[in-house]
Length: 318
Image (cartoon, rainbow, N blue to C red; front, top):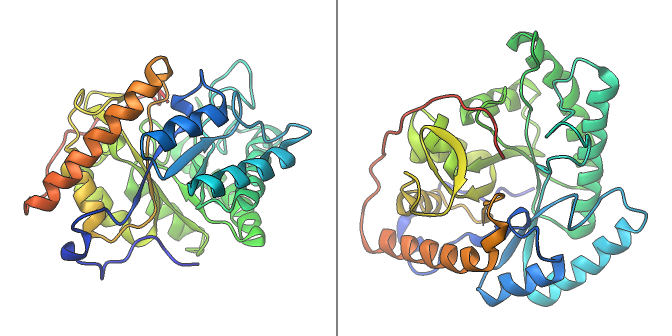
């Protein structure tokens, strides 16, 4: 399995079009059917889609899910689009509690629900020939120590890794503010603790870097580079884990995209605005403009010095 990053790629090879593919997340298009979402994204020039499994676009447990996957793969082929599978759907597994259950649930049966969902996501990804499946660790349950939570991750994550290996799929652990795996450093530690499997890489959300990464977005991307499989793009303020349109937060978008170019990242970089479906087409247009301009600005300058952002744990809001 080849990694979508390479440290040997120099800045000069990144001039012009970026080496990575700009995409947009379907969780920002929840008022549009999936086919229409793809039409809008293709119209705006996106070359990839980040597909969040579950309502309203593709229920992986539906009776006709495999047929839906086959049709979607044909449509993506027609559009020339890449795809990553996202698993951050809020209420697919528990209609009352967002993002539950998780790997960290003290109840083995409930934790198994999360494991089986991620294994099913791997199967969907195989059918879609997706770049990877992105997933998170979960929030530490009340009364559970960090050490106990870590042991649960070590016991449960390898089951998903093994399923991914069987299906030829890569999985990408995403650090999330407020979760046990909160930073790139946490994710790299977990990867090492489970044996550094080739199938397990990282997702980095650029906005999250503003909130929790001690070395900012550039430092986080440089650290993640050897194992970076997926990137989510959004703005944030350092005081809150809230996904914002570009320009509404503190992210240096030009520096972030430029760093991706510098490390030779060739995967998908998809906009992540799950609370903005009310203006999805407008934001898709403005986001493409912002990213294109940010990339052009970085390509025209040599602004590669790292920035420092404040860090404060936040409750996961996505």
